[in-house]
Length: 324
Length: 282
Image (cartoon, rainbow over all chains, first blue to last red; front, side):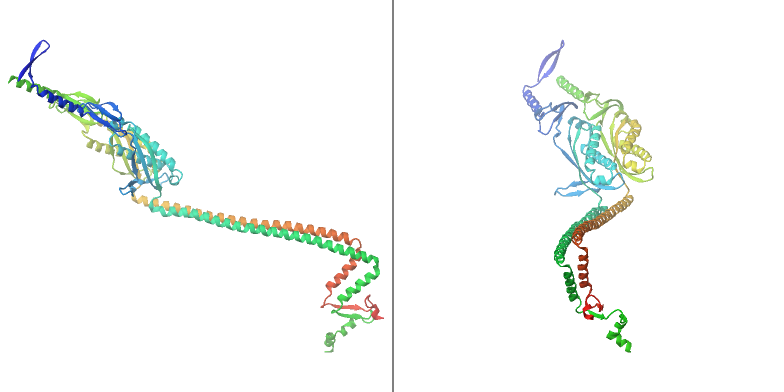
């Protein structure tokens, strides 16, 4: 092996002169080593590069290069991917759901229990913080989400939770969860908090359903009564109308009849006046002709000859009564 | 021979140089120990150096936020109600040197955390009624527990960032009494709806009956008025006509009345000297 002499400062040092063939080999190794630093960042990722363990830069999507190990390392978290956490249930592989009651049953502010299921969607907003500040991002989100939901539901009453308050609870949970994750400087952004099924626990489901059917019963009873009203009132109006029409008919008939009677009277009067005395007699006798036939009548001779006392004897039945 | 020794020395030198280098990651912090005695900590990431082993060694600690899920514990509230509290802790090693001296490693640290947080939580929750724990004060309670626990854990080089109640549940036996109460409450509501329904229906029916009576009475009133008008007009017409000759009217009406009142059942006693029979009597 040859010795090469080099001068360091003013001293001459001998170092071994390597065989010339080793240089290309080393060169190839060097090149290969440099090539291991090539990496690609997907469109949904960013590259976070650490130089000697210290964060140095963020690389955007595309083909990139970093100084190879051990000088630089890179992580490529998926920053656009929205991750999903299910609470109170799990979607199974066959697309069905399994309830997780341990997670879904919770206390409301009025010391009732509800069964609430929730989905949390989150993504990375700060990849550097995400990588360097927290351990176990999914568990962190899950635990914080659970704490948030329960805190918020604990502030609400059961009826609100089951009905109108759902949206508010969702928003407040999201707010609180975001605040917690920011406090941890987790670099996680909460995209959405969605309350799924919020229902009474199955132990008391029957009673809750009965309330719903009681509501329906109430409506039914009211509807029936309305039906009664719709039946009775028009009939009464009809009856009223007919009473009024009857009266109007009566009025008209009364007037017409009186007019007729008056006209008859006036006409008769006119004739009567022509021959007062004879007409009077005639009318009298005509009436008598009509009235007297068929009527039992006694004609008493005169007032002096016994009057009514005599009359009694003429009566056949009275006579019999006397003879007995 | 000399060359070989030179090469060997050079190689050893290079090895030595490399073994003094330590890379500190963003997520780590390092304590340097000299013959097992901690002498300094490195928290800044990047390239650092130390004497090679066995002179100096290093211990690596997590710099990121650590989690600890405290197992659920049964705790009594001020109003002596038993609650099952499931909480978690987020903590950090802030002083790795102290941490190393006092608790050495994470599992031991978790045991300490458990003790401290549990006792603080028990103490704090004992100052609140169950309703407060469930509702408004949860945030406040957790903050207090965090602060109080921090005082204890700072002795171990640990900072507690957050103690959070994940779940507050009731023991199994209390749960069933809650269910019983919920059921009773719902029953009451259902009954209320049903009797409200009856009440409203009854109201509607009653109002209907009243309206019907009023409508008919109103109609009667109007009808009578109309009839009266008819009678009045008729009366007027009769009066006007008959007053032309009242005595003739009387005469005529008398004759008409005879026709009406005298029938088969009537017995008439007529004097012979009456107007009709005066001829007969002669």
